[in-house]
Length: 297
Image 1: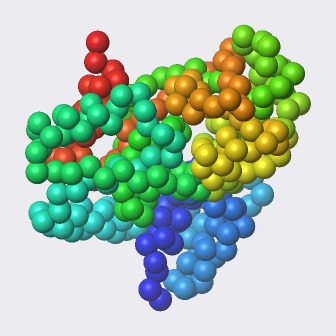
Image 2: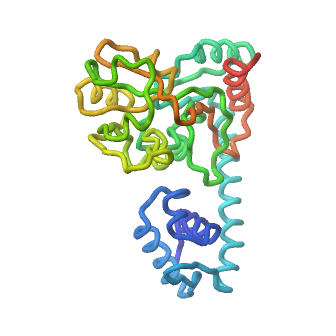
Image 3: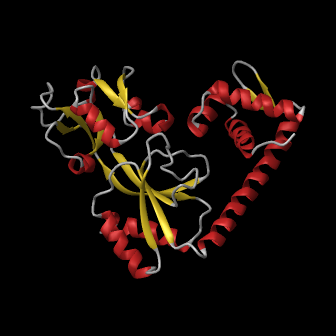
């Protein structure tokens, strides 16, 4: 039987978390039944039991312990292979593709472009918008080289990030909304409101922009939006409200949407994100330029 790298990643996630639920929802962003099915298929193909599970616990068998150590080695070797291939390809490729999911603004693009032109004049920056359906903003499938993304991003050992901005969360309301006259609002005042949500595939990022951790009740989902533009159109149409970063309230300013600060929830964090094993100088320069632009005193 030839196991796929995906199967090994799935197994390692379960083995390290010793929980199908945590591995599925917090690391892999797939359903628990789908994860269980893949693990069963892996065990069937190997004709060995890797995990012992009951209704409360998951433990590794002796074979599972061996499998975990070997799977880690295989995945690490594959990461090194990808890095070596990327470096070889980069020798003739001087374009750095930057993923983003909301407009970047904040003076970042001109500042970073200027810095890159000074340090690496042979390199060109290419910007690509990615749907909310990809919580890695294009990094997981190598669609982009780096990304400007809102945290949280998947913490599966594949990505690194550096926070470049911390901004209060605001709420976008349709013009004429009952809270329009308020200078600020609280989450309690929004509890009963219908919300425009990110797609389920966005994982924990969907929950963050619904303030799921701070709520006392489940949010009412009126609609889902795959891009920021879709979100604002849905809000303007009166379908619901949506949380957003303070900087985006200015960037996406429009007459039919009213934005107000939400005073009692933690702020949002904007980060520059890259693949952990991508050691190219162009990536390092881009990351440092982003930090220098928004974080330098």
